[in-house]
Length: 504
Image 1: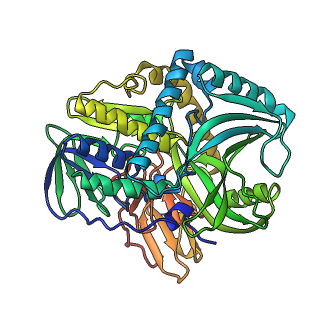
Image 2: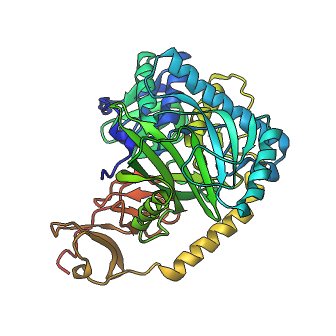
Image 3: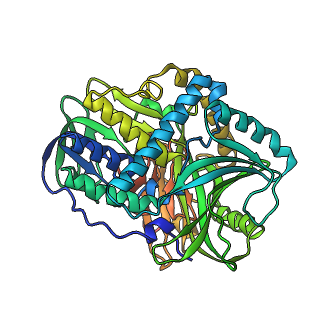
């Protein structure tokens, strides 16, 4: 079994260099996923000088760990959007997401991108009669939103369902292949792309200055295309960080269902789809088991639950891949897209929940239009300064405080050990010695890796992620490697290494 995403394993490696000198551009983009690369391409085509700074590789963050599904509805369900806003807003959300899918499809055709793009039906399935009332409400919302929706009594799956909501003309693709190919087109249009170039400090002003290890980028505009904005922002109080898990399996039969399938079984939700790799291998993907970042100690059980779920419904031969991904939920079901600081020209794109491929593309379209001075019909809908997030914030923060308090009951901000000798091979624990908290991991060879346990974002204490072998912050979702290096989240600065008490 491979501990990586199927998409990352089925895409060519990119080879963009690291930033080695100082640059001056119109727009600097932090993050080389689908959001940043799409924005870079659109702005470069319009004549702007652009630099994309990616800490890993193009598409190597959240984009490469998604499902590869594209749909006009939203994971939180349209009926919830309507209840928080109104029917007009719900229709605008559907129209904007439909436009984003069309943007992807047009780009695929324009540049003949081999990314396995196909139009497919989307289905929401209730496995028991108890869940059909929710499905019926979502069906009515879909019709009101202008979608081609149907209620079926069966679906092309090898297990029994109670009912299925079907929406035609949605889509699937390989997100890594698409993003990497689009990056090549962006570069041809004049966009500079830098990999392995994490931004370590951002000085906002006129102009903005982005600092990296080997050079700076000075820019009139800055786009945070990192899923969660880097640094300390007020919007972080309106974001809930979550992780979800995925496995890719092979079946004994050749019956791999085509389409996007979301299943409901009580409080359990799963996403299922098939994929044929570039080498012709067939896989069935299943995703689910969400939880707040840093709030689950035994992460590996999430994969076990997914395997149990899919084996009960399909004739599984083997589990070939497993991975997890991060998403950020907003306070009012809609992402925050646009200028967070109009004066200094700083833009954000966050709060996509599990709808990041479609919303990421839409965010690039909206922010590009804002920078270019073009009218965009959806910019006000997703404006980070809209009133609704503030209206929803009280309930949202209350929910998060409750989750946090539940977490504190089980794992308070106390050290798990008082001596490093208590840490076994391939185990991580927070150790407190003389008032200092260490995030300590002992690898399988017995070597101890010690970094500060204090998150560099807003000083919360990180927790050990057994499955990912990472240190995760339960407050705002920053994640770090065992050597302290930032993996993702709003944190910019690595966890400092601490070697003072190596012998204890």
